[in-house]
Image (cartoon, rainbow, N blue to C red; front, side, top):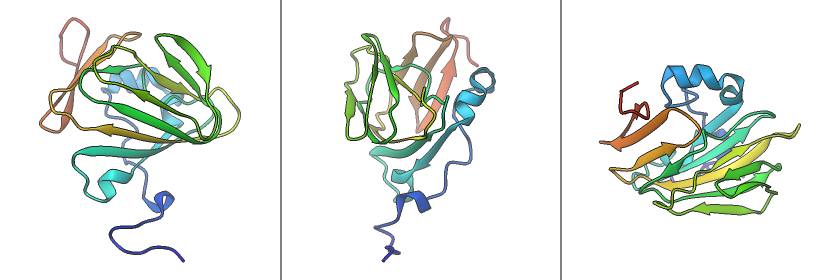
Amino acid sequence: MTPSTSVARVALDIPPRDRPSTYPQAIQTLLGERLAGREKRALGDAFGLANFGVNLTRLAPGAVSALRHAHSRQDELVYILAGSPTLRTNEGSMRLAPGMCAGFKAGTGNASQLLNETGEDVLVLEIGDRSSGDEVTYPDDDLFATFVDGQWRFFHQDGTPY
């Protein structure tokens, strides 16, 4: 039986986000197909959750979860449901498997990213809070972001707005 109430839904029945990313267009163009192969279903938004976000993310072969990044205030946790993505952090790379999880404490500067380097889809549950004033550094890219009034604002590393 499929739940049909406002408090319970089938996760894969929640439509994917309309926009592939909140990154500036120049960054989206740079990421190209790696970003196009990412599909996020905002599970938390479907229930009106405001304090934290939950995404069900599918990564097609060759896709990335995001640019490698680190948050100043937002804790993040990922849980691998299917597939074997590569986790890239400041410590290096490691292959994850279904049932594994990884957590990223805010303010540590440990930048992370998931890559699907396999021929099969990866399915990941992503959980993070929505801390106002959060700042995100992207050590591999000319990008910096701040979260103000519920919206991400993007800048070049020198502070120039995108």
